[in-house]
Image: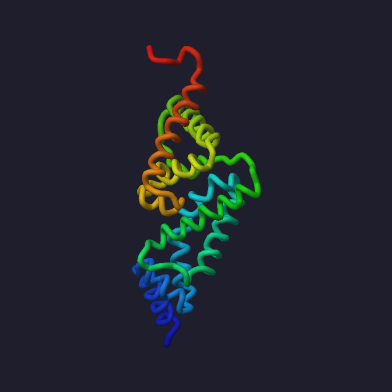
Length: 201
């Protein structure tokens, strides 16, 4: 086979993996196909990084913890139940790793503003939005992780109640209760930070 023929074959294999479902990639990974697991990493490394960030607090730590999440998942791949979603199973591993990390290191965590989308506006509006975003991030950071993590998963990542409940290993009613309390705590924190005289006119 010519060099061009090999390249075309490799290209077809790559495209083929990209079209496979998560469960198909898991099955192939368990059979020793490392490239299939690499496809799973490619699909979810950014999401895992965003979920792990509230626990990590530094970009370097996020990268290390993201890598550790995928290593743990690979070691436990044989325990994955294909009746469930791989993404939810993976994020549960990331969340548990984050909790373990936070228990070992009780540092103040921060959100990375670069992980959140920005909208181009004029200088004054951009400055006001930046200040508001910082206030919100600071307020979320001040919450216990039991409340900050559900907020991130729900509103930054847009995961469903069922997915978050499974990741955090709590019931959906308990999750809704946490989110309700977290929103109230967040609103109260932001209200306390509002400058005097800036109330409704």
